[in-house]
Image (cartoon, rainbow, N blue to C red):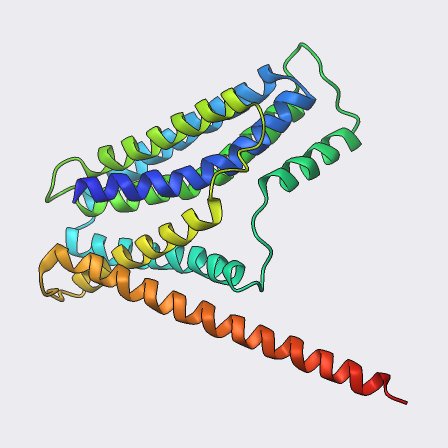
Length: 262
């Protein structure tokens, strides 16, 4: 189970780190790297504090059954949110996430403020970098806490496994970003969000049911079955939404032609 926890935390963290790196990169280029890195490191320290204190408190004071119910509900909410975005994007009802466009937009906003490259630490640059890493990292922190704490009492250090997965994702994203020195547009972020959404919803459903003392057939081996069910349901929903969009476009064209007739 711990390898699954680490894998889920890795994928979820990779998505968030890519988004945070884009803002950190903007600050480094437009203001200075000192301000960018100070803000990013301060946010990382804040997130580590949140994981350490809240994670330990949950494991120490909340009974395992209640914890799994709480964790399950949180993961379902996170998973459905990510699944919703992915389904809307794959069905064409929402534009695909474009890190390069976000990079250019944020760059323009910073330049519009009149911020220029300076050798000293710049408060605005620190604040922007800190906010970006903290906001994107909060989801990572909660995923690490919820995934890890749910198996803490039965399978060793779950929070440690989830944190390792998140840390590896962060190191890989930062390394790739430093080498490329540009927004990581090649990372299949939308696909990752879809996969992570399915994983979070599957684990959440499994643990929420266990919180209600439901015993799953095949025990933990039923989690992949849940993932297949959610994956199939998502595929059918994407197909349905695409058909609906095509029908609406055809109807709109027909109405436009009808109005154009003399």
